[in-house]
Image (cartoon, rainbow, N blue to C red):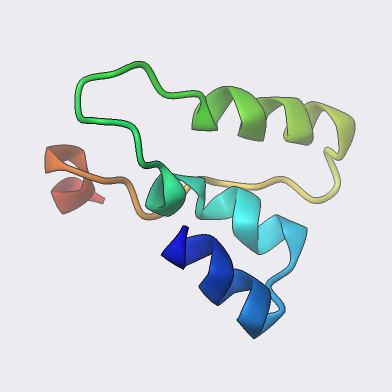
Amino acid sequence: QGVWEQWIREGRTVHYVLSHLPQANFDPEFFRTHEQAIADTFNQHFPDKPVRLWGKKGLFGLFQ
């Protein structure tokens, strides 16, 4: 919730939020995530403004 509140206070754009969805994921490690599917759907509808996910959590975040 804190991440979402910060983004609202900062007036972040939808593009920013979609690009940084992994930072807001509060699901436990090793559970299925949906950030990539959300980004893929956005990119299909808005190919002129594609998003790329940033800020992965956990072990994989170290290799970004």
